[in-house]
Image (cartoon, rainbow, N blue to C red; front, top):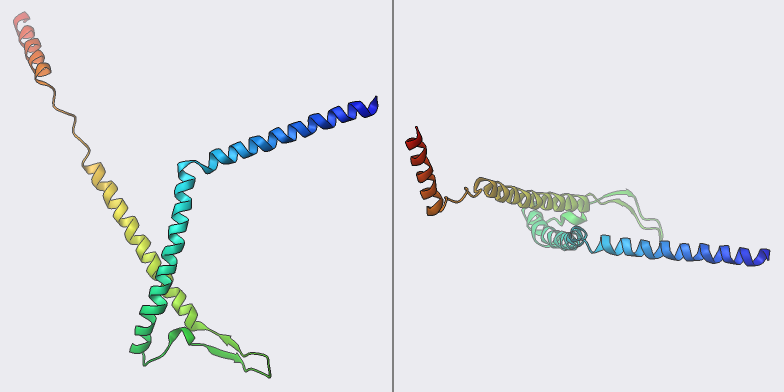
Amino acid sequence: MHSVSATIIENVFIEEKKEEQMQWIKDFKAFALKGNVMDLAIGVIIGASFGKVISSLVGDVLMPFLGLILGKIDLSKLSITLKQAVGETPALLLSYGKFLQTVIDFVIIAFCVFLIISLLQRMKKKEKETVKAPPAPSEEVVLLGEIRDLLKKEKN
């Protein structure tokens, strides 16, 4: 008899676990399908793509021009040798050129984000400034107001 009650308790416990899991799945589905989460996911994907475009712009377009101006130097390959190569052990390099390229990437991305945010703030400001004035009252309302005012004058 003891084993039957233990089995019943285990079954109840298993059913409760299943219900908790199903509720968790339902909650997650409701969360994931909200507009804000979807907007965030789209923003992350677009941001990652934007970062790749900017990295290509810096690495493939701007850095070669900058290197040409500085005397035909490939800035991405600038480095300081910390330890010379020994046999099959490669040299230990401090690649500050790649760091410079990454800093330039960051500055360009930050500037673009600044421009986008500034544009959005200006658009919001214009929306607030162009708040619609309340519509003019209809002719009937104006006429009724005049009649009311005339009746008040006659009473006085």
